[in-house]
Image (cartoon, rainbow, N blue to C red):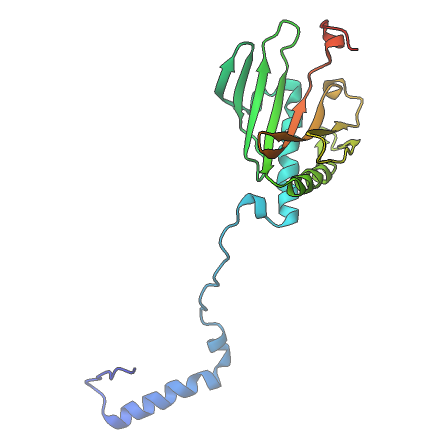
Length: 223
């Protein structure tokens, strides 16, 4: 629908000439028409971290794992958040570092006379269906083998481990990875990817620990 605009100082002939000029202007000056502001494109809605493009997911995932590994020499002090639960000789704290898609992350501290180390855990997913859980478990293992620790001299130390395939007949499966370095600060650090059946769901967790075995800290000897 067009609206008639009144020009008090122009007659009908003037109006016709003006309209012809306006219509012809882009034909003689095409560059002007091309440089006019265009409507802003509609950007897609932001996606949840768990459905980021694969490269972005891996980058964020690797950065989170590296941040945790970097803080182990400080016993995870720099990434420890608020106290969540205290029970006996164990305290659970929120972790300030979380991989994309994680359901929750905690740091556990022990107050044993023989062990004052801290451990980090991320609950990555929960599935009623074993097939989906096993797929998530396998995918995370591949992602962990692409994670590394960058040393001050820019050397990259990748996680290496042994893949333990999941089987529905076994309620608990763990694949363990370690940093391939002789640095004594990371000698006892290991990354455990676990798949376990609990109540009615299959859970996929990542545990990063530096706790030594009882035979190394004066506890009961290993059998």
